Length: 280
Ligand SMILES: Nc1ncnc2c1ncn2[C@@H]1O[C@H](COP(=O)(O)OP(=O)(O)OP(=O)(O)O)[C@@H](O)[C@H]1O
Image (cartoon, rainbow, N blue to C red):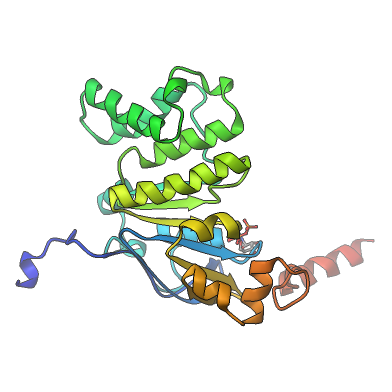
């Protein structure tokens, strides 16, 4: 096929790829040389200690944070280079569940989930009703459709936000800490839901999580961030068998080892400390 005949949206098996990516804030590099691939049909977890750069990586994947080097390819397109309509189209094909997946407080549960359909599609009211109820059913909240957001619990709100993130049936779904604040049953149900939804939609799911137990049950690949880069990557079984002290310490939650607990002392901290000392 000649290049000119190829659609820019040509089907690609890789939904998300980081290619020699460095990303950070201003001059500060948070992660460097990140190489990662997530294929359609896969659930992939990105793990790492607090401050290791998980959310920063997610921001690179959504195009919120431009790479300092390398590329973030979303559905075959370099999201760092996309702007305007192209970026809008790309974002329509991705679902993002942010950590603070805030719902619109002036809308009821049903309208919260219907919102992306009204914004991005020309579906009829009947089609919207069917789609919204099926997504609410998947998160166990069909019968809560009529409730106001003030009438649901925090855990329920997260499940509604999940239904809203997948209502457009995206090709790539990014979840920032999907298990945070959920009780053990909801956690297990949510993990299974992410797996089933990925299998059913044939999409790719990327989870940012601390939760080794839940995520190892449902993931195909796990990447571990540390020391400003990817320290390990593999299947849950491969990581569980790893002798690497960093991987071992992280997976077993051991207090001593190479995983840094202390936030690193940067020149910015030293300058701040110097100013404090001079002021006192
Ligand atoms: N907007 C920002 N501006 C400057 N630095 C930031 C910003 N957001 C995060 N950082 C820094 O980037 C580093 C990585 O933060 P990030 O939020 O990506 O970590 P994380 O792995 O998601 O942590 P956690 O698990 O605690 O949520 C931290 O040192 C943090 O201070």
